[in-house]
Image 1: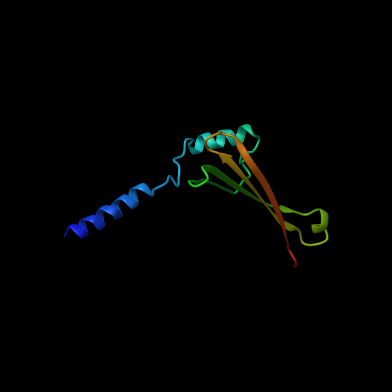
Image 2 (image 1 turned 120 degrees about the vertical axis):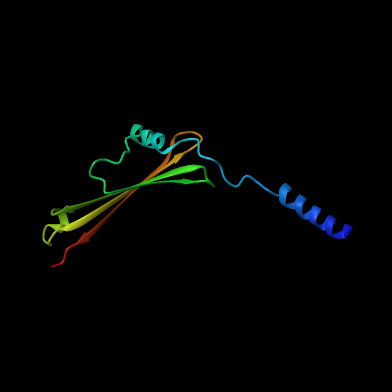
Length: 114
């Protein structure tokens, strides 16, 4: 019986002493993240079709992704039946420092062959 209690006690100690803070709680809320994005001149406008805000607990940072879809008929799409342009802008905001860490922009063209 003492052997089982000793094993359980050692198991309890190994579980409690080995715990690390693998995540963090967010200091900012979503409205504050949008205010920071607006101050950095990155804000989802009225023509934005998709906006997603996600908090990563391991890195303690917010990820804001917006996508804009529009139809264009100029450039290399002029001789085609037009193109659909999808622009995705992703920005990462640090939760502790309240600063914009990175911003990436990706533009894809899908031609209309008809």
